[in-house]
Amino acid sequence: MDGGCTCGAVRYRLTAKPLFVHCCHCRWCQRETGSAFALNAMIEAERVVLLSGAPEIVPTPSNSGKGQKISRCPACRVAVWSNYAGAGDSVRFVRVGTLDAPDALPPDIHIFTLSKQPWVRLPEGTPAVPEYYDRAKYWPAESLARWQALRARSGR
Ligand SMILES: [Zn+2]
Ligand SMILES: [Zn+2]
Image (cartoon, rainbow, N blue to C red; front, side):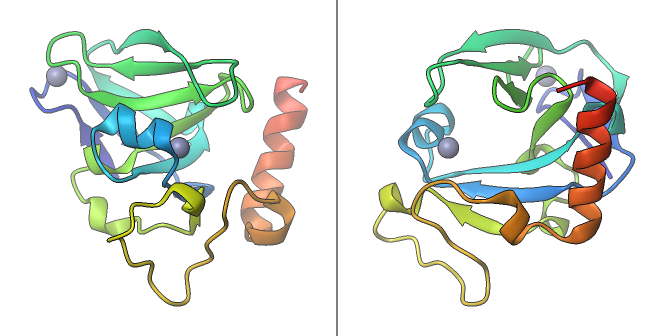
């Protein structure tokens, strides 16, 4: 799965399917995107291969207070992924809308629905939680195994 920024300078490839896809309705994501929610595909950093360009890392405040690093195209400034303090540099939150075929990755879960914009109707059959969630309860076994392997490798 390939993706990139709007001007085309930054291009990347996902070499595996994501661990899990968040649709986040928190106020922070609403503000950062200027929209109703953010769609983030969590994936191991080494499974995101840069094909061209060099994203610039912009330190940005986050809900947790620990900050996040948003990787943006240095030319058009579109955000392609971010790293949160909680998950560290080994996990990227790829902005699904920057994929060439974003339809391929619908949300696996809706989070922070407490601050969901009232006109957004959540689909039946997709988990939705008021704030955050317990990974073990929602992730498929394969993703949990990949997560454990990643934790072991990164020593966290
Ligand atoms: Zn660009
Ligand atoms: Zn959010």
